[in-house]
Image 1 (cartoon, rainbow, N blue to C red):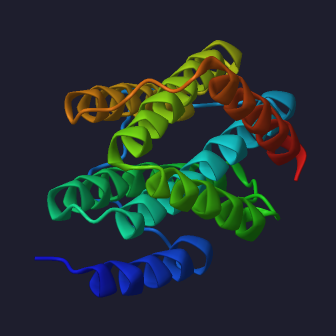
Image 2 (cartoon, rainbow, N blue to C red):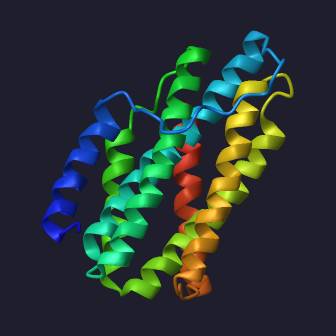
Length: 209
């Protein structure tokens, strides 16, 4: 069984791997059979910027789940967070690979995004497990809505990016449902609004940096 010390060591290792190592997925990257992407330069730049934002979201997801796993005293819930982190790791690998294919770079501010998200996750965990799960639910719902917006903005011909984002969207919805089933409390509306504002700052900045 994973102990708190194991989780702390895993969190430190996860931070280094997320920020500095090539991520590896446990699932094959989603594709659209028989469809090949051919993008004009302008569309390629747009896809690169949007996938950079999505990659930042996955960097933050790794930080959030690591912090919440570290903060909970419930071994079963700790495993829940670690499993979700593993699944989000697929997204991290997929978005990084797609950035490479598009000739785009990850955000220059990834260490900052990771540190901020880890701090938020740790604070959420200190408020109690049910509120921590509520934070997961709200985060995943906002990410799901964000990904839906990206499906509208991504070039129609970018089949690879669209397939990745569509699968990510389904996975985020599943994580939200699982957190609800685990006993999540609904967050107050002012907290939700604050989370949306912080997300807008992050996504707007990451689009360019």
